Image 1: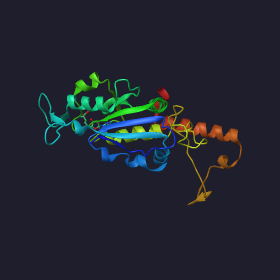
Image 2: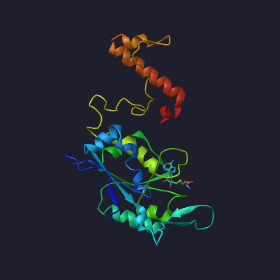
Image 3: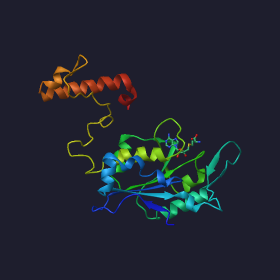
Image 4: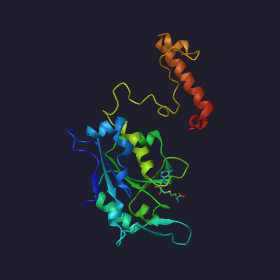
Length: 241
Ligand code: SAH
């Protein structure tokens, strides 16, 4: 058993964004990332994914990877020695990719960090389970903790998928040229303006006249004003930043 399940067929293009995900549930991958934009890009070799099963470093007949919390309390903790073995096997010492640990205690993921990661060589992502991982392995293997929001998931897998999805759409060639993603919410510190499409009248509701005026300067001004207003009312914290 090699432990690494390449979820990517050998593509014609050398993939530029290479991801290794360490998990107790390798079968969850690529999951939703095998569909739509990310899935097409995976097939095309624009990014690659290897799901690495932490449990192959587990101990005993049951390949145990966790143990009770030191100091007492409910729940189990992923063992430092086992996780470190998995990390060392999945990612060589000179691996240039950042090592991330999905964790509710981490720095909240932002579009800026996503852009940063997407411009790099990929990532090695550790998915926690149970109560989390032994604190010592975080420092010893220099794992950067990243949170996807102030709520608790049952495991890091879906958080890793969220992070990867956000990065993959920014990889050159994944989205069309027209849709560079530069106009989206957060890219300019603002939420995005509202969108409309046909039909022109729906349930008595009209598309704002200005969007049909053909005056691109006016449209741009209107959109900016809408974005500002939305941000002010919904996310004033973004304006303060
Ligand atoms: N006891 C921990 C929560 C563990 S949840 C605490 O209170 O902080 C189990 C695993 O799910 C975590 O190790 C992490 O990998 C993942 N996880 C849960 N919530 C997350 C979030 N908001 N962002 C990223 N990962 C999360």
